[in-house]
Amino acid sequence: MTAKQIIDTYISFFQKRGHRQIGNSPLVPENDPTTLFTSSGMQPLIPYLLGEPHPAGSRLVNAQNCFRAVDIEEVGDNRHSTFFRMLGNWSLGDYFKSQEIPWLFELLTEGFGLPKEKLYVTVFNGFKNIERDNDSYGIWSELVSKDRIFFAGVDKNWWSRSGIPENMPVGEIGGPDTEVYYRFDDVEHKPQCKDNPVECECGKFLEIANSVFIQYQKTEQGFIELPQKNVDFGGGVERLLAAIEDRSDIFQTSLFTPIINSIEQESGKAYLKNKKEMRIIADHLTAAVFITNSGIKPSNKDQGYILRRLLRRSFDNFYLLKGENIRAVVEKIVDQYIPTDEYLKVNFEEIELTILEEEQNYGRTLQKAKSFIENKYEERLIDGVKKISAQDAFILYSTHGLSPTQIRSLGYVFDEQEFADKMEDHQKLSRTGAQQKFRGGLADHSDLTIMGHTATHLLHQALRSKFGEQLHQTGSNITSERIRFDFNFDRMLTPEEIKQIENTVNDKIGEDLPVHFEIMPLTKAKQIGAIGLFDEKYQQDVKVYFIGHPGEKFYSVEFCGGPHVNFTGQLKKFKIIKVENIGKGQKRIYAKVNDQI
Image (cartoon, rainbow, N blue to C red; front, side, top):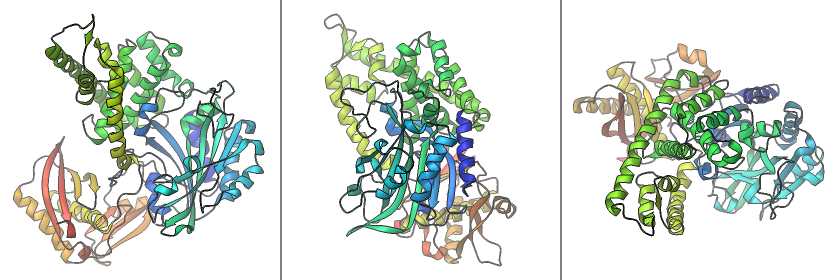
């Protein structure tokens, strides 16, 4: 099976069981300041797992493009990747364990043709006052041999946005999960491994499916059962393909082999002798292609920083192998993914240009870094080699963006242990800061954030009323502290225009207009003039928010998932803090509402 056939088989399987397909949400989330990238199919659905009605109903299915930056340092082994496609099906208070588990087993064995004797299962072992998941164990016992079912603790078989139960804040939801692993016969255990998926970390057991049963909510007194019990399934396409093809190395599957072959051809090196380097190149360039496709440019902040880090790490390894034409590798990646992501073909020139420009920029960066060292050390040799301090090596890494490998290619040596210690301290700080950025999930839904969300609709319409309907939103980020709203406009706004826009929004707040939503077919939403980006994330039924009195012409009609206030008067006051140019005909407004002011 190809990756596309896996996706099509999966979607069809659950559509036949009453599920509605929902769209592939943007890789760079909208209106979610808690995360830089969509890291799971579940992430955009958290409001509905919490009880908000979904436009498509209570049984959902999709295939979601995902990126996990926390896996960057793991890439290089036989199973980790930063970019992947996640298959997902959800029950929002509908079916539960007794239907999900048999369906999952049927999908894996009949839909994908995996031999059941190769499948191993883990279930939740319980934690304090949370009971062991004997229900899942009992269901699995009817499907697979009991000697292939293992209990595991909260570190492996529990899900919440905050991790283990002890880390969950009061009010957060979570629950046990059951995971399915595929066993590879060609992988030899490490001495410390035991022959089961709970106590083996060598890659002999590959996790290919995970069903989460979201059935608990944390309270001051402990955990209580949720009135709406949810199912959240996730399965990575790349890992499923490895199991279906019985390839313990995901980079040797039919998806990655052509990409690896192009790296071999451009470098003149063999994969079997350069696995780690070629895996990094293949994964990082693939992720870079999709991030670039989302409109992100390499920079020193947020998503742009991650993109730059991916590209430079791939360049380092490509140069280490004496690779000459990275363009050919990028072209092969796009060729491989076009069957499932056709828009890459349309955006290919911009993707390629962005990557090649960063390669040129990196070349200049390397030269500046070399000049920095040469000017400081004046090319003096110590014991016959060009030795620099670990601190300067770290400066080259943190300021100039050079990896340790690239510093050594430049011909410099340094105290590796001292550098590693500095790196560890740096990574601890980075992980602490990244816990919020990369944990994913629901944006802050405090009252002020909800007010800010509603204010963007008023601001959007005020701008369009003033400057024309060719103006449209290109992005936003809303927190409890401020509103950030991006839009297309080819000049700076004058102080008078800024004041006019601010006054218009405040006038609509003063009118205390009602706010409500309706779920309707996409075609009808377009017919009534709803504002929105008509991309792949919209399906047959959509949620449209209206601001204004029924029976009159609405002031604003816009696609949105919500939530919003019930009346505009709840915003009290709107104030624009500043307007700035963010390049390429884009402007950004910072504003505040109510108690933010």
